[in-house]
Length: 331
Image 1 (cartoon, rainbow, N blue to C red):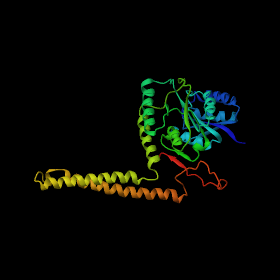
Image 2: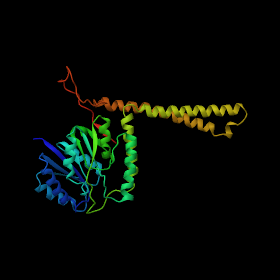
Image 3: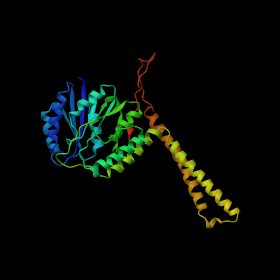
Image 4: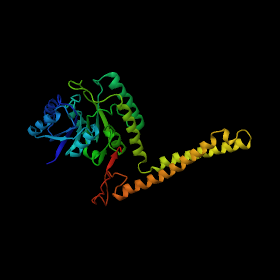
């Protein structure tokens, strides 16, 4: 028997919250009239969370607990939960009680309008202004500008995805927040709704200001992978050609100065700059060619394809469709 909704919750040192979260989730999901499961991923907690989850797993028929040997991070915990989810719709959320389980029903209603991804927006966020809200606002603005996908709150874990959006996706680093971008780039319909955000009652936040720099670096990686994953020569080759052009320009200027009697080669850094730029240019071109070989080996050795088919119409509609390649977010 299939399951309609899978709720995935990463947990790290949330002993004061886990039982309350489970009971609230159970009550809200039971009202939806759909089959459901809860997947709690213990990300190496050391405050008693593991023992509480073990007890809940014995008494709750809808709960699955995944326990890590050590702390691997939120993205890894979400990836492990998503991998084990059986629902047609997968809903990740935080385990600190700041996300409201009652909003899951609203996410599902919005998804019923034909969307493949519905993202939560903590419009009235109950966090510290300087250490949490301000960096988040700046990061969300940058992410929206770079990706072209306008969402107010990429950092909100509470989202709803159709299973096909997540199938084959591999999450690394801090990439879970960029799944809506990847889904939109693949043609999925993405939207957002305002959700309730509650003040933290127990425990403390695991994130600080340094997270904004990780997000920016991950964003650069996502953009690179989407734009150049099948054509890395455009990046390395373009940089290499620019370096070669700069080297030739510097060399030509040095020769011109010498012929005009204005400067000797030893009195200007241009000859050294010429050698440096030419060397960098040739190395970049060679790296681009090597990257092209690696990408072709990656796809062809595992029979992967650099595209995703939505549907096939006409005379071949009943023919088996080649499996889509697993899609990595991060490295």
